[in-house]
Amino acid sequence: MQIRRLFFLLAAILIFPGQASSHDVKAMEFEGGFAVQRLSDHIYVTHGPQEFPSPKTQGFMNNPGFIITDHGVVVVDPGSSVQIGNKLLASIANITSQAVVAVFNTHVHGDHWLGNQAIRQAYPDVRIYAHQRMIERVEAGEGEEWIKLFNQLTRGATAGTRVVAPNIGLQGGEIIKIGDILFHIHHTGKAHSDTDIMIEIPKDRGIFLGDIVTNKRIQSARPTDGDIRGQIRAVEFVLKTDNRWYIPGHGSSGGRELPQQQLIFLKKLYASVERHYKKGLADFEMRELVKQELIEYRDWYNFEELGRVISSVYLRVEEDSF
Image 1 (spheres, rainbow, N blue to C red):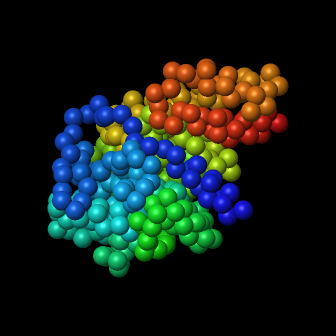
Image 2: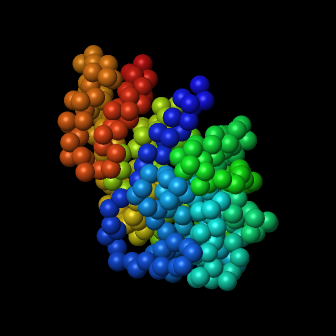
Image 3: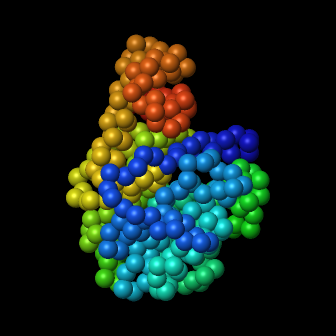
């Protein structure tokens, strides 16, 4: 049963970085840290590698970001291990001497937040924000499962990582002022998971999307965790915001083309599965047909995993039919 559980956790992170940004940004390389891109006056992002979690990457695969305010640094999604969190801190230290005063975790999947430990060790009083449902799931033991999974995938390269849960719960709709920056928190309901938040910084016209939007990657999640209809609603909400920078959970940051391409794909996927469902086909019977109808996305990484995604969408289509 535990192996099955870890398999589903692994499926939830089969999302990898994407295409180059349409915006002209320059990455800054730092010894001991990550290459960092400055997107705006206050927002910096380091885009994770393409590789699957391995000893070499120490599980690194997401897009940690940070915002420099006049009161201190705010981190978004510090990565998958204490090692990755420490490298992020090294990158921050090369840009500013200010302390980290707050962290936002966009959702419960461990590749985004297990780096909390490094931040807490360096700054014991740091505030760590997340959706209240994420805190509940971590307290129920999900964090330990993610640690075990990454330790297996990296053959021990993430050893020493411990669960440091968020300590301030959010519901969505909050506006949090840190220094001279306002952080608008959005939660549209169950989407990529039931714990998603998006963090918008109107002053810089930037929004951190978590895994609600990824850049040209097929998302593969547990059927009980994600909701494609909810994700469609979330991306539609994103497109109503007036931002210049859309920062996905995986893949290069860019403009409105990122959520737009995500929305088109999700709608086509749902429509294809629904069409074959109405013809009476089971999920395993429609897989190759749906893949053929979505062949235009064959250059998206993980396209061959579309079969598993179809099974998840099928359950939602079936539910919607009643």
